[in-house]
Amino acid sequence: MKFLLTSAGITNDSIRKALVDLLGKPIAESKALCIPTAICAEPGGPGYAWQEIREWGEMGWKAFGVLELTALPSTLQEHWLPLLEAADALLVGGGNGLYLSYWMQQSGLAEHLPKLLQEKVYVGVSAGSVRVTRRINVNREELEQTSVYHDDEYDETARPMPAVTKRWGL
Image 1 (cartoon, rainbow, N blue to C red):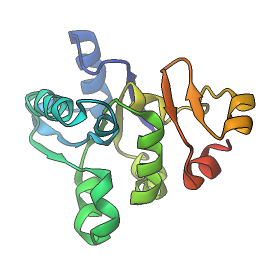
Image 2 (cartoon, one colour; image 1 turned 135 degrees about the vertical axis):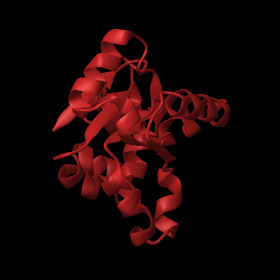
Image 3 (spheres, rainbow, N blue to C red; image 1 turned 180 degrees about the vertical axis):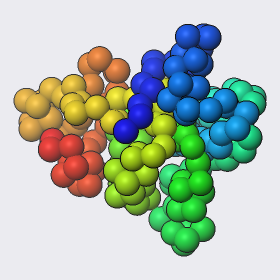
Image 4 (spheres, rainbow, N blue to C red; image 1 turned 120 degrees about the vertical axis):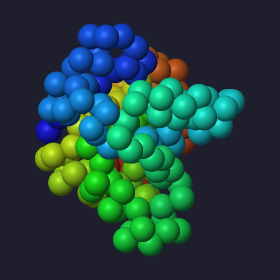
């Protein structure tokens, strides 16, 4: 598995070089698929999503696409899974991590990630990075009392959804 976990993306030459090293070839010879879902749950999210997509897209990829996870449950898997399989890099953006986790599961992406990541580079930005780590910072006492998830480190608050709670052991 190849992970490039960042807080703000490909922001300097050192991080860009790390990406090229993980890809094993130049960006111009690589295919990328951007997953901007997490930002859509934030205030002003759609505008930020377009900014993120534009920035990723302008990196000079051989091929570049966008996969919005909220659309996948209503789309045939044979329409979107080949896009994931053809990509060299999965670019998972920042935003609300709980929302991203929920849609990774609802969309079916979480089910396919272990196999996909045997050969793909996973590039995470902020929430996109945190979602593939082992732990979420949860105030378990508050969660038990209020059923509200609050992550002090990332200042995210949400009610956990059953699939997220089960997957992350909350």
